[in-house]
Length: 276
Length: 319
Figure 1 (cartoon, chains in turn red, blue):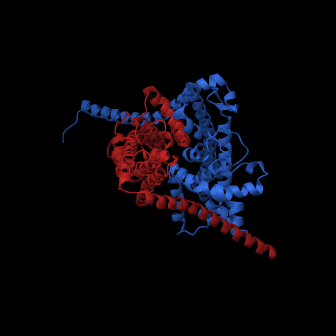
Figure 2 (cartoon, rainbow over the protein chains, first blue to last red; figure 1 turned 90 degrees about the vertical axis):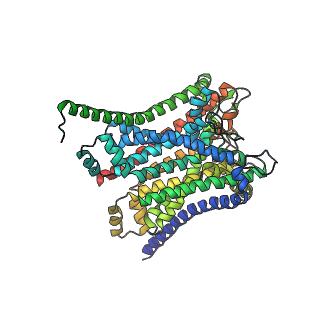
Figure 3 (spheres, chains in turn purple, brown; figure 1 turned 45 degrees about the vertical axis):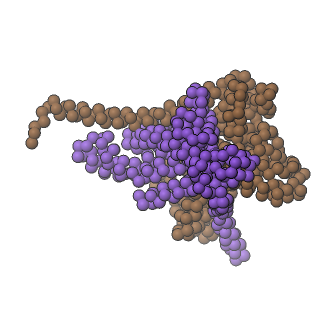
């Protein structure tokens, strides 16, 4: 009897401990988000969103150039990564079935585990050191490499979920293979693929390490692709490690903008997946 | 009805074949591009690190000094810092991650589970710099004053707690890493646990086991290699994590047994010095660090993927 009681008690305790651990994980999230929301809201104003950075000690100023710069770099990254990722994903799901696609899948997994800073120095060596200057383009290339694995993987998985009967129906009508893929298979998987791309974009939007030696940063307006450009995560980093309280408070404001962008994208992406 | 004569039919057929072939070739070349990219990555890293490797040889990995003035560069402090910080972070985050994954997969009521999982996944989507900022301004002060000061006064005779607490340093980096790998470790382990077939649970319950005994003796052992794989993946994350660690670890190339003292990791040393390095040997040594980092994560991820894949494949065969 005592033995059974003890076993039941042990079970209760351990089950409570698991719930406690989950609660700890959730409260870690809330602790980070609460500080970002409160301190960020204190620093958020119109200037932060519309003005250029000011030198230390000069009041006002903002991160507008970084906001635009981030959009440009991410845009370049998406333009480069989406065709390659879609193509490779289509290959895996529609033309696969041999050893080569096992290799490609494995490489996509490996690439997603390569640290972002390694991607940064790779692109530095590949582009920046050859051209002799930092550039928005090299930043976009670095981010596009980071996006590739997840775009490939989701495209592959989503296309596989399209039932074979649809492919067979189209082929039986005498439609060519590529036309079937473009007009039947891809539209069938559209929601899933779009979600995957959105999530990939959201994930790299907050990356700093690959931009340190590629996009580099720029205190002025720049929309040029072959010149250094400011980005939100990089500006946030510079402000956060600075010793000036004014800059640190701007770092919180920037953190709020960045986190809000990321959270909204991932929530939207997840919602669209639920409806898909 | 127009009659299509033979030559025209041949023509359309070959046109079809060309279209399909072109499309297939395009898709194939995009996939091949990935292979090319990986090879290029390895080549560029080797090329960049070549000067350092040819100057120092394999001693580069074990040399303890990193001194731009005397032009002696060794990777040991950074390797040591990387290994210690990520292993400790995994030791801190691993047990609660496993428990939380068990909660989500086995215990949590159906209506609550999606929202808790969602919140934990959001934790993974917060950018690394934001963790760094939070760490610098919230975690470090809290670490320095109550926690490290207490450890220093009460356990100061242990080497791990025997130096002046600074706040910034190894211990704070471990703490932020633990928080950052937590959601990742949870979601991989949860998925592995969910894949355990119900027979396992039913058989154990039918023997009269309690809920916890069922989980601990029948479900977890079944998922063991997948869980280990998930933890290895989390370790790979911790090893490569750059920004938050750079902001919290104090950035000094020292090998110290004290957890309060500043240190370096491979990634933080690259992030911190790369833009400011002037001599080609310095740049090349930093590329050498990058190569070492790449090799470590390659080993970890390769091993982990194999473990997770084996579990997946095993389950598929069983079904």
